[in-house]
Length: 114
Length: 110
Image (cartoon, rainbow over the protein chains, first blue to last red):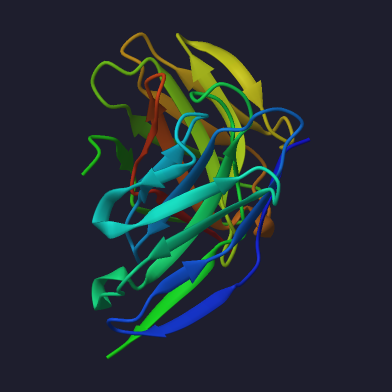
């Protein structure tokens, strides 16, 4: 069975400092992994996706994530946080082909202090 | 904006009632998935429809049912509502590469 574990339920950073949101995955085969962001009262937006190509994946708004098979991790990073980054972030693994079932982590709430 | 729309935005029902939620998929997408997001949780997969046929189901009871229409829009029906059904219901339409989510319907069961 596939699953993801987000290691922090809440992360707080100061504006301009780096962001690190941690995610570990479990999969019986080579997974497709995603990070989604959810702003209050808005739908989920795809930040980036890993699909067995380059292990360092660049996404929108300056976010990137690195797939590390040996550590079964897919941590999300950003060099410099902006106030607009405050939101809920979900690490997601695909349950089959990319159009299939998505399995979400519990979410990490990112707060950005001025 | 993803082009996926859902209606209604909010809904209040009482226990035992039935509810129908609607989703219009993005143009060109023939696959629609439904997810339930309880407060403070990640979304959970309910089921997926591909070309009007159910194409996978999560761990939800049969009182959760769905339809997909020839124009690929979709409905989620929930019978015999329970208090725990209170949640944000998200619809996603997809091409092969990505699922595009709508803004959701907030269902409150009293």
